[in-house]
Amino acid sequence: MLHQIQSATLDLVEQNGLDATTVGDIAARVGISERTVFRYYASKVHALMPGQQGLIDALVTCESAHTSAAGILDDLLAACRDQFAREVEQSDFRRISRLLLREPELLQVVARQERSLVEALSATLVDRGALRHLQALLVAEVVTATWRVAWQSFARDQAGGLDSDPLALFDDTLRELGGLFPRG
Image 1 (cartoon, rainbow, N blue to C red):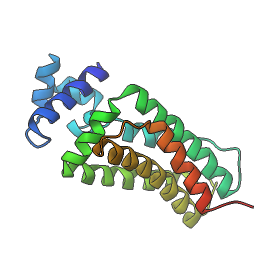
Image 2: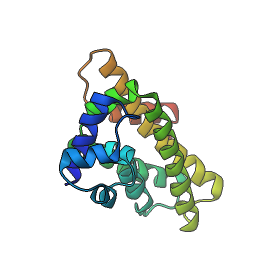
Image 3: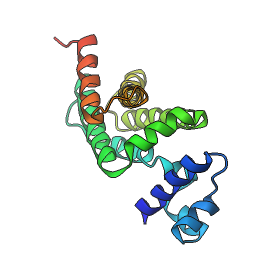
Image 4: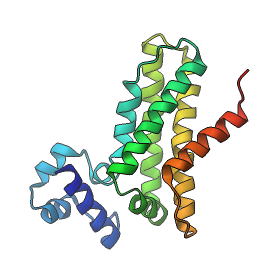
Protein backbone atom coordinates (compact mmCIF):
# COMPACT_ATOMS: atom_id res chain seq x y z
CA MET A 1 0.00 0.00 0.00
CA LEU A 2 2.81 2.42 0.87
CA HIS A 3 4.43 1.98 -2.53
CA GLN A 4 1.09 2.37 -4.34
CA ILE A 5 0.42 5.65 -2.57
CA GLN A 6 3.90 6.98 -3.26
CA SER A 7 3.75 5.92 -6.90
CA ALA A 8 0.35 7.57 -7.38
CA THR A 9 1.63 10.73 -5.70
CA LEU A 10 4.67 10.84 -7.98
CA ASP A 11 2.51 10.28 -11.07
CA LEU A 12 0.05 13.01 -10.13
CA VAL A 13 2.67 15.59 -9.12
CA GLU A 14 4.59 14.96 -12.34
CA GLN A 15 1.38 15.40 -14.36
CA ASN A 16 -0.30 18.24 -12.49
CA GLY A 17 2.29 19.86 -10.25
CA LEU A 18 2.47 19.85 -6.47
CA ASP A 19 -0.11 22.57 -5.83
CA ALA A 20 -2.73 21.01 -8.11
CA THR A 21 -2.37 17.54 -6.60
CA THR A 22 -4.63 16.81 -3.62
CA VAL A 23 -4.77 13.95 -1.16
CA GLY A 24 -8.21 13.23 -2.63
CA ASP A 25 -6.63 12.82 -6.07
CA ILE A 26 -4.04 10.45 -4.64
CA ALA A 27 -6.66 8.39 -2.81
CA ALA A 28 -8.82 8.16 -5.93
CA ARG A 29 -5.85 7.05 -8.04
CA VAL A 30 -5.07 4.23 -5.58
CA GLY A 31 -8.74 3.38 -4.94
CA ILE A 32 -8.72 4.11 -1.21
CA SER A 33 -10.12 6.79 1.08
CA GLU A 34 -8.30 9.97 2.04
CA ARG A 35 -8.34 8.71 5.62
CA THR A 36 -6.33 5.66 4.49
CA VAL A 37 -3.75 7.90 2.82
CA PHE A 38 -3.40 9.81 6.09
CA ARG A 39 -3.05 6.54 8.01
CA TYR A 40 0.23 5.98 6.15
CA TYR A 41 1.43 9.51 5.41
CA ALA A 42 1.03 12.82 7.22
CA SER A 43 0.75 14.79 3.96
CA LYS A 44 1.04 14.54 0.19
CA VAL A 45 4.64 15.73 0.45
CA HIS A 46 5.42 12.99 2.96
CA ALA A 47 3.89 10.48 0.50
CA LEU A 48 6.03 11.96 -2.25
CA MET A 49 9.28 11.90 -0.25
CA PRO A 50 8.97 9.39 2.59
CA GLY A 51 12.75 9.05 2.94
CA GLN A 52 13.11 12.17 5.03
CA GLN A 53 11.07 10.78 7.93
CA GLY A 54 12.83 7.44 7.54
CA LEU A 55 16.15 9.23 7.85
CA ILE A 56 15.08 11.04 11.01
CA ASP A 57 13.82 7.79 12.53
CA ALA A 58 17.01 5.89 11.59
CA LEU A 59 19.34 8.53 12.99
CA VAL A 60 17.58 9.26 16.27
CA THR A 61 17.47 5.53 17.04
CA CYS A 62 21.10 4.95 16.04
CA GLU A 63 23.11 3.86 19.06
CA SER A 64 26.85 4.48 19.11
CA ALA A 65 29.36 2.67 21.27
CA HIS A 66 31.71 5.62 20.82
CA THR A 67 32.10 8.44 23.32
CA SER A 68 33.92 10.91 21.08
CA ALA A 69 32.12 13.27 18.74
CA ALA A 70 34.19 11.92 15.83
CA GLY A 71 33.21 8.32 16.59
CA ILE A 72 29.55 9.22 17.01
CA LEU A 73 29.68 11.17 13.75
CA ASP A 74 31.17 8.15 11.95
CA ASP A 75 28.41 5.90 13.27
CA LEU A 76 25.72 8.38 12.27
CA LEU A 77 27.20 8.81 8.80
CA ALA A 78 27.20 5.02 8.40
CA ALA A 79 23.53 4.92 9.45
CA CYS A 80 22.82 7.79 7.07
CA ARG A 81 24.50 5.88 4.23
CA ASP A 82 22.45 2.78 5.03
CA GLN A 83 19.25 4.80 4.94
CA PHE A 84 20.33 6.48 1.71
CA ALA A 85 20.92 3.04 0.16
CA ARG A 86 17.46 1.87 1.32
CA GLU A 87 15.86 4.94 -0.16
CA VAL A 88 17.62 4.40 -3.48
CA GLU A 89 16.30 0.81 -3.52
CA GLN A 90 12.78 1.48 -2.28
CA SER A 91 11.77 4.76 -3.87
CA ASP A 92 11.92 6.26 -7.30
CA PHE A 93 15.01 8.32 -6.58
CA ARG A 94 15.39 9.67 -10.12
CA ARG A 95 11.81 10.87 -10.40
CA ILE A 96 11.96 12.57 -7.02
CA SER A 97 15.24 14.30 -7.96
CA ARG A 98 13.66 15.65 -11.16
CA LEU A 99 10.68 16.93 -9.19
CA LEU A 100 12.95 18.69 -6.71
CA LEU A 101 14.43 20.63 -9.62
CA ARG A 102 11.03 21.36 -11.15
CA GLU A 103 9.01 22.19 -8.02
CA PRO A 104 10.70 24.96 -5.97
CA GLU A 105 8.15 24.49 -3.17
CA LEU A 106 9.57 21.02 -2.58
CA LEU A 107 12.97 22.52 -1.80
CA GLN A 108 11.34 24.58 0.95
CA VAL A 109 9.69 21.44 2.32
CA VAL A 110 13.02 19.61 2.25
CA ALA A 111 14.68 22.51 4.07
CA ARG A 112 12.03 22.32 6.82
CA GLN A 113 12.47 18.56 7.06
CA GLU A 114 16.23 18.99 7.33
CA ARG A 115 15.71 21.51 10.11
CA SER A 116 13.54 18.94 11.90
CA LEU A 117 16.27 16.35 11.44
CA VAL A 118 18.93 18.61 12.95
CA GLU A 119 16.70 19.50 15.90
CA ALA A 120 15.63 15.90 16.59
CA LEU A 121 19.10 14.41 16.21
CA SER A 122 20.93 17.03 18.23
CA ALA A 123 18.31 16.85 21.01
CA THR A 124 18.62 13.05 21.08
CA LEU A 125 22.41 13.21 21.33
CA VAL A 126 22.22 15.71 24.19
CA ASP A 127 19.41 13.81 26.00
CA ARG A 128 21.45 10.60 25.86
CA GLY A 129 24.41 12.44 27.33
CA ALA A 130 26.47 11.47 24.28
CA LEU A 131 27.51 15.03 23.40
CA ARG A 132 27.29 18.57 24.68
CA HIS A 133 24.78 20.85 22.96
CA LEU A 134 27.19 22.56 20.56
CA GLN A 135 28.89 19.27 19.61
CA ALA A 136 25.51 17.62 19.05
CA LEU A 137 24.35 20.48 16.86
CA LEU A 138 27.53 20.36 14.76
CA VAL A 139 27.33 16.58 14.35
CA ALA A 140 23.65 16.79 13.34
CA GLU A 141 24.40 19.56 10.84
CA VAL A 142 27.28 17.61 9.27
CA VAL A 143 25.17 14.48 8.88
CA THR A 144 22.32 16.49 7.37
CA ALA A 145 24.66 18.37 5.03
CA THR A 146 26.18 15.09 3.85
CA TRP A 147 22.72 13.76 2.95
CA ARG A 148 21.84 17.04 1.18
CA VAL A 149 25.10 17.26 -0.80
CA ALA A 150 24.73 13.68 -2.04
CA TRP A 151 21.13 14.36 -3.13
CA GLN A 152 22.08 17.66 -4.79
CA SER A 153 24.97 16.02 -6.62
CA PHE A 154 22.64 13.36 -7.96
CA ALA A 155 20.02 15.95 -9.00
CA ARG A 156 22.71 18.03 -10.72
CA ASP A 157 23.95 15.00 -12.64
CA GLN A 158 20.39 14.10 -13.64
CA ALA A 159 19.74 17.64 -14.85
CA GLY A 160 22.96 17.46 -16.88
CA GLY A 161 21.87 14.23 -18.52
CA LEU A 162 24.36 12.06 -16.64
CA ASP A 163 23.32 8.61 -15.43
CA SER A 164 25.07 8.53 -12.08
CA ASP A 165 24.90 6.12 -9.17
CA PRO A 166 23.36 7.86 -6.13
CA LEU A 167 25.12 5.61 -3.63
CA ALA A 168 28.49 6.19 -5.30
CA LEU A 169 27.83 9.93 -5.01
CA PHE A 170 27.08 9.50 -1.31
CA ASP A 171 30.39 7.67 -0.89
CA ASP A 172 32.17 10.43 -2.85
CA THR A 173 30.58 12.97 -0.50
CA LEU A 174 31.91 11.04 2.51
CA ARG A 175 35.41 10.90 0.98
CA GLU A 176 35.39 14.64 0.28
CA LEU A 177 34.23 15.32 3.83
CA GLY A 178 37.09 13.20 5.16
CA GLY A 179 39.51 15.11 2.95
CA LEU A 180 38.29 18.44 4.25
CA PHE A 181 38.62 17.38 7.88
CA PRO A 182 41.34 14.72 8.08
CA ARG A 183 41.79 12.98 11.39
CA GLY A 184 45.04 12.38 13.19
